[in-house]
Length: 167
Image (cartoon, rainbow, N blue to C red):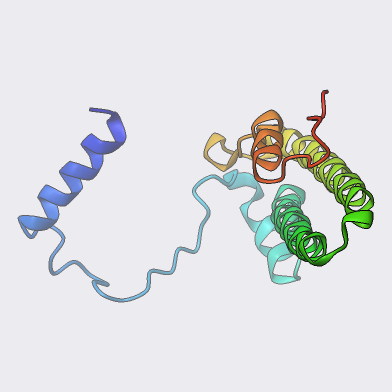
């Protein structure tokens, strides 16, 4: 049993025994005024900056990374929709245009994969920077496993021209 499961089990046992009952603030939202990871000497300065709408650079980078992850997901979804439309055209198309449509579809697939890989590499650069600057290890984020993502993409969208890409 790992440490997390042990802790969760003990919390659950305590809750079942009623050890969390009748605590002050029970059932109400908790307002935590202080960041436990924040350097106490920087607390006042950070509070002033936060009240003025500023946040630490690593927090802004986290927001940027979250947006980039969503954007990469959209590239994947947009390509999926494009491929579906192109496959429908192939099924409706004439035999004379079949080879041309397959080539166009494979070219679009390779361009989409290249765009995704570029985004993933940029995301990993940002994640490396984030992980080097966050104030606590529990705020670090894992790097993207690009070979695994590429494999998933290639599995979902194989080349139709008969030759798998090699890199």
